[in-house]
Structures are given as C-alpha cells and as structure tokens.
Amino acid sequence: MKVVLYDVDSKIPNLALMKLSSFYRSKGYQTLLSKKPRLIPADLYFASVIFNSEKSLNQVERLTELYGDRITIGGTGVDLKTSLADEAERCFPDYNLYAHTQYALGFLTRGCNKRCAFCVVPKKEGHLRPNYSTFDDFVPKDQQNVMLLDNNLLAAPNANDLLEEMAKRQLNVNFSQTLDIQHLTDELYPKLKMVNSVNSRFTRKMIYFSCNTVKQAKWFNWLSDELRGFGKGQVTAVIMFGFNTRLSQDFAILKMMKKLGVVPFVQKYQPISGVPARIPEDYFDMNLDEVAEFRFRSNGQNGEKFFRYVSKLYFNRYGRYYLPILKAIYRYNNKPRLQYYLDRPDLLSVEMYKGYL
Ligand code: SF4
Image (cartoon, rainbow, N blue to C red; front, top):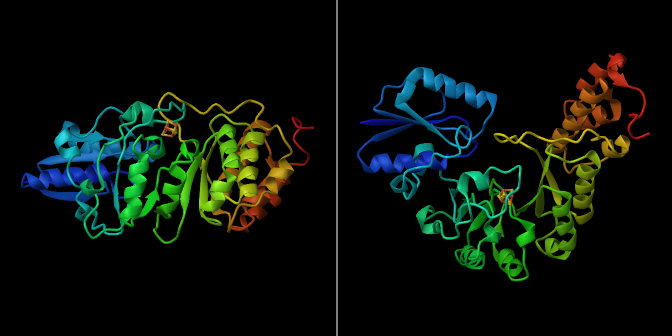
C-alpha cells in the first residue's frame, strides 16, 4: 500500500505532510514525497499548498487533471478550512520524509486573538490555543534546533513557562513567524533573553519581531533599551509593506529601525482571499530622493524588494521611472541593468514628482 504526498510549494519541510506520513506509516503504508505534479501509481494521494500564487495554483490544476477526485488537496494556498484529522494531527512528524535533520519544527500554540486585516491566521486558526502541543510532540530526542511556527507565542498565557522550558532545554530556537513586540512585557523580557534565539539557518543569534504598522514601530522605540539588551545587530524587524501605507509611513518605519540598530527585513503583503492591498492614492507623499538614499544593511538584496515596489508604483502612477530609485535598486547587484534605463531617457522622469512639489 502506498501514499503519495505532494509538496506543492513549501519553502521548509511541510509539517502537515510529515504528520500524514507518520499517520499512514503507522497503518502499514509506504509513503513517498513528490515535489512535482507527475503521475505516480499509488493508493492514496494528498497535496499541500501554502501559497495562493499563480505558480502554485497551476500545479494544483495539473494535480487535479492527473488524479481528479482521488487526490485530497489542502493548505492555506487553497483552503482555510480543511485541517488534518485529529489522529494525524497528533502524530510525531516523520522527518525522514524529507531526510531532514537540521531542525525540528512545530507549534506550541495555535491561533491568535488579534484580528489584523491582512492576516490569515485568525480566519484559519481562530483564537489563541495556548497548550496546543509540547516539545516532546515534535522534537526528536537528539535535536537541539527548533523552528517554531507559532503565530503569537508571547500573547499566550503560558508564554512564561514556554520560554523557561526553551532555556532549560538549552534549545536553539528560531521564531520563524516573528514575535509580537506589543506582548514583550517586563515579565517575559528576561525569560526571552535567556532563550538562544537564532536565525532560520541556525548559524547565528537573531530574534525576530514583526512590524506591520507605524503604531507598532513606536513600540520598538518605547522598548529600545530592551531591544539593545538582545545584543548588537541581533534583532530583526520583519516589516510588511504594500498593504495600506503611504510612502512616508513605510519610510518612517525603516528610519526608526535604522535609528534603533534593528535589522530591517522587508516583506511585501501577499494578498489573502478577499483582502486586496489598499495602497492610498496619494502614496507618494514625501521626498523620493530621501528614500532613494536609504541604505539597507549588507548588500541590500532584501531592500531591493522595497525599492522595486516603489519604482513600480511610481511607473504605474506617472508613466515614467524615477532615476534615483532605479539607482537604488541596482546599487549593489545586477549593476549593468541600470544602463538599460539610461539608454532610454524617454522612460525616465526628469523632475521630482508633482504630488510632492
Ligand atoms: S499578524 Fe500576527 S498579531 Fe496580527 S492577527 Fe496575524 S498572527 Fe495575530
């Protein structure tokens, strides 16, 4: 008996598929992982889809063509309601499915009590469930690296105990979904400092907080002493842009992080079903040259995403590219590409955008 598990688009080992693998192995099935939609003779078929992107949906279409209703397809990318059956959900993940040994991954809590308009978690997972599982439910005995998928761990009433346990077990913990700085209380701060928080490669110390609004950026300012206490260059703010902010707001957040010595990591809003981005008509509300001068850390590969976004919006609004922003995009990488625009002056805006002047 054989089960084929299709991982359509996961960037890390897919927890649901690893649990399904354990579940079916315990029933005597052989399980096989496939990352490509191809015909494989088997008794059962499952697919997991994380992103609602065109590429992922094309793969879903292909799988449906291949298997019709013989395949069960779930995951945030296609459906917010389907979840694993309880018995499968409780299984210890089968890390062998991916021959994965670098870290364990799982949730200690599920859900979130906040209702951020751009977030799929409240719809998908509902209210915060503090005692969803324990480390023993997903961490192999000899594994010290743990990637947590919790969405708002610091908001959990048992956060104190969970942080204590991480420190006591001397785990290296990656808070992959970021922490909510608004829940960094006087009580939790010393506990969180005791945890060895690391980056997603488990190669160096790093702690991640989300910053989705200007209001949240103010919390970073209020808690600047605490953030410094985590160590120089060891705090990253994962900053969302492209949902409902104006340029001056995006820029205020970036400047705030720079002032505080926090590493900015920008992420464009990925529209969730029924919630399109709401970029204000008057997005360009400040001096664009000042924005173009902003320096992200290192070679700026991540920062280029933000400049590209600004450039594209500018082009859509004004029908031209703004040269200083193009220069910022190609400041460190792919430099020869700038020449393409320099050779086409008709594509370039020669003046500051009118809205600001
Ligand atoms: S963005 Fe974070 S805090 Fe807001 S609803 Fe989602 S998980 Fe909760």
